[in-house]
Image (cartoon, rainbow, N blue to C red; front, side, top):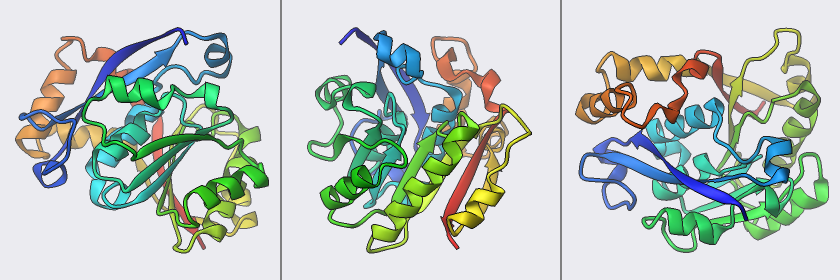
Length: 260
């Protein structure tokens, strides 16, 4: 696999990182992301980290108690698996990163080499094309019929995906022993399409919506404590963490979706 690794640095509050691997003494979590130069990844845009994935990773850090710790997590359209890696490093019980094929994601062994603090046996990958009922059932079987959190970064890239993404979550939720929450990081590209009619079709509701820029403003204002301030200073200093692509964040929204 033609790939390379770069580090993404995230802030993690002390209460969320105690006893967890992958973080430094400064409270900053460093995630090694394996990006691909393969033709498949290039055609499908799955081999690189996009602003929506960064926003979703930051949201997992900010709400690790509800989105990671002790939770069974499934990621849709995982690509580089950044949000999955964050959840696994922040105490998730099990994380299953999914995409249309195994080849759309880095091998677990490669991600483990890039993240020495990754707990063994917590992260796995599986093929699950959106809207494929058989693939969803296979994932549910692998998870023992239990899902707590479903994550998706930029899975609403095209309006043709809306129905299949929501249908996939609906099937995961219907087959889970407990009702999961879907958290989507969506980069706005058009105002001519809306989720609202399809949410009703699938019996789902948006329970919370938050611009990703609100999360960034929290750190910029110094409201996240010393760790948050140190992280903000680092990513805005132009010292190598400019990969955060701040310019794309103002167009990303975070949506929490549950069964109605």
